[in-house]
Length: 161
Ligand code: FES
Image (cartoon, rainbow, N blue to C red; front, side, top):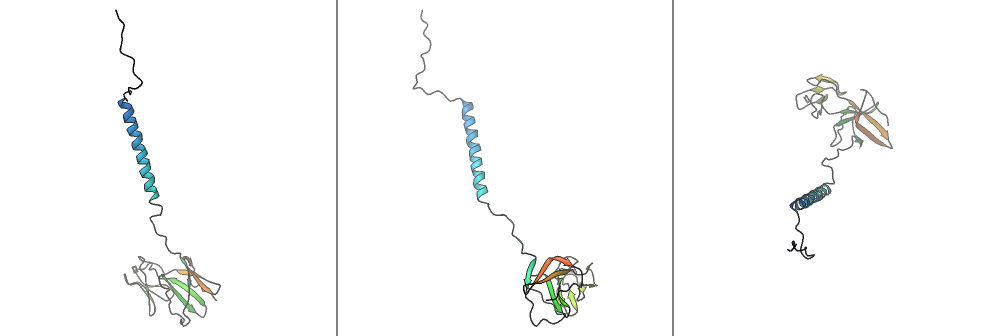
């Protein structure tokens, strides 16, 4: 009577890897790869996807020959500057109807979009614009005229040099 069982495993025989361990390794590898590619994606987009807008405060150089009541519109700005005997002032050129840029006209401003007309001080002469054009803050600093398109002031506010 012999009690011989299976031979003891040799140290040289590899142990079979259970299927559950293989699936666990595959899941860990997938998670590591996803993390890696997410990190690479984040590094490739360091800039914001929006452009900064220009400052609403800007320096304006008035022409020396600007006549009283004549509008001067600095390039790229939606402001008309005026100079008269009481000082310098600025009026927005954004129509109060739907926001079109109005044009200086012979006796004030006119809107090319729907025909609103404004007097030289920005009051509504003819609709559909519902409100007068806002006056904007002007200051005189260091010999320069500074206009702030984002700072309305009461109509009639003029600044002396
Ligand atoms: S936007 Fe100026 S009249 Fe309509």
